[in-house]
Image (cartoon, rainbow, N blue to C red; front, side, top):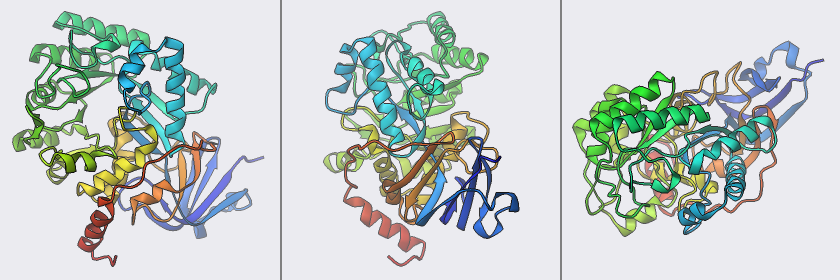
Length: 417
């Protein structure tokens, strides 16, 4: 007897550009996608399977949060609170964070830094089915310098030999990737976000050792010097990539942006839901997200979720911010699904609705290709073939600038408001 299920909606969007299917259907069997296409072309062998229709809705792949900190709870003072928690308490916070992300349609998350590699325990609990959460990729404690950004997570190293040993230790612990803080950060006093933390030799050692072990490197980098060293070393993704100079002024380097694009390095610009308000307070701090997009950089969605003022539940607000910054909606969605999966090294169709892909599916009311805010109105969440009843979570309102940004985008596409 077949376990197939049919899901239909006014449209299906499959996770890649130009993949919208009007009046579409998705067939799920054995926790994977068995078929996707127009409802009128549903194969004969599936036509008697149980079905669920979402009138006025859209089916699309589960979303990918490429830059999260599950050990942070998103409230003011979260970093100090995280460092003060006991290990069991911190694991409980991470489990709650994972459920919060799943409750807003995120079915894959890359956790980019937690104390003492405790997030490995959370990943294993989700994979074992002990708790519900998205698919989790774990970086463990960020590799940093003595006194460097997030030194409190116990991932400090200060020489080429030190960093190689630390990469090997992380690998032994079972991480999925390595996160390195190539510059200082705004959340660690005296770490200077505009300055590089590691020498060229140290950065090269980190990347060489990580790649030798078959893993990817994500590099936190704000200032030009640190971005340059990360690019030269051959990192796989750059986080933030704000080109910030001393004083919080953004000064993009066009040649360096072009080098990032030429090398095919993905950038997670961490355009958080509250960034528009931050830019209104400080007009000099406007990350060059649109500029990178226009020059061919492959952008992926990630919100630095969990840090102060950025609850995990505000994921969709970050996508709205990308629209405010001038990124076309479909490209925002690709960066939140298939392109993000590519950047994270996930294979087998994660981030897409395609035969053989894991059944990570969300249904939303409306059409997110017309208005990304439709992702706020979830009708169904399915992660790896199992439906999930979202927890009730607080989600902050859409920034007031979004409506005007959406109007401009529609006008540029010749669509009536």
